[in-house]
Amino acid sequence: MKKTAAKKILILSGISHMIDVVETAKRMGFYTIVTDKAPGSPAKAYADRSYDVSTSDMDRLVEIAQSEGIDGVFNGFDDLNTWNALALCEKLGMRYYATKEQLEICSNKDQFKAFCRQFNVPVIGEYEIGADLQEADLAALQYPVIAKPVDSYASQGITVCYSPEELKAGYQKALDYSKSQTVIIEPFIDTPYGTMMYYTVQNGEVYLSAVTDRHVHKQAKEHPPLPIAVAFPSRHKELYLEKVDPQVREMIRAMNINNGVLLIQALYENEEFYIYEMGFRISGSQHYTIVEKQTGINLLEMMLDYAVGEDLAKYDISKYDNSYMPYPSCNLPILLNHGTIAEIKGLEEILAMPGILNAVINRKVGDEVKPNGSYSQMFGRFNISENSLAALHKTIDLLYTKLEIVSTEGLDMKLVKYQPTEIEAIS
Image (cartoon, rainbow, N blue to C red; front, side):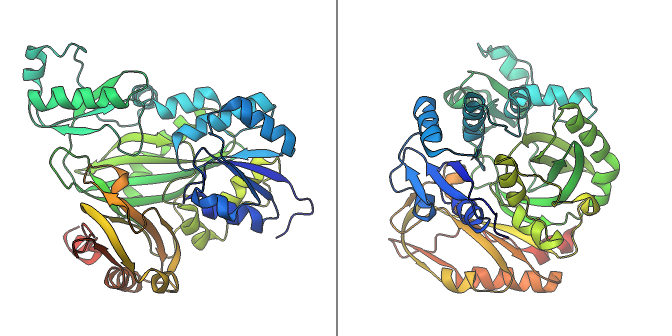
């Protein structure tokens, strides 16, 4: 539905994920302005106007905002620009969905775990060892362990360590990725499966938009697992609702969040959930496309409206609580092996398939991919929804068949395939 006034929205970052943000904002009738420091970043080609100005250059962003007469600032998908958007809104006197205190809880793994424990939200324990890594302390640990920065994202700086020597190297790697120079060491639960929960807060009321199954693949023993599928809804939805959801809602309410979307990740083992991460932003999986398929409500549109000061009354999600998911769905990341992309085939045909809701493609011909255990190995993600599990599985199989990503050496670069029927057979 078109807006009566063409409000202007400044969008921080022009990465591929932001293309859908720009297109959605324009469909809503907004004038879109995209800025980042990368000339020609993908979303700029879709915007009404763009600037090659860093999203952390506050002085220039304030000048742009004032000269353009913007009505709001929007960010999504990454934690860095969440902080930048908050700082810019504070300088401009504009409302923003998050506060500094809320972002600190979500961004710092130590603070987040401590906050979880206040509300009996289950988390993984951690090892208390000094930064000098005394040999006796390292020898006393039960391996494998995982070393990670307390303040990184997208699996950056994380290493799975199987010995004291590997932990020393992993600790240094984590330090290199930590702004606060703080590393957390935890027992490594080696499982190819976890859960991911999406909460939506509307006028102070907390709703559970989805409980999902997050299937992962670990390419090398030292690398953290990367997602290969996020299945909607979770096979363990009822167990989560019973054992963890009440405490998580209490925790979110205690953060004094009035409006916004959150994603929470957990490991799952022996009917127990271990929460380990929270993001207070639109997720990189663009889960809002699947939620819209289930409910008819677009959470991205809701947050865009919020950014420019619109009333959110029309986004009534109260009747879609407790992971309302009538249509089996999946977010399907495609992980790549080592190599340089020479050819991509089948993409247009896949995007035309009825069950494909949307896709975000991160890689292009000529890109070199290195197996480093981070999200840089992801070719892209596809959001898929069908009327039955059988139809969903058929669409997934067909996507894998049609999609060809060939290296300069003539090899298929797809690293691994999600096999939903095999997973269901052993669950």
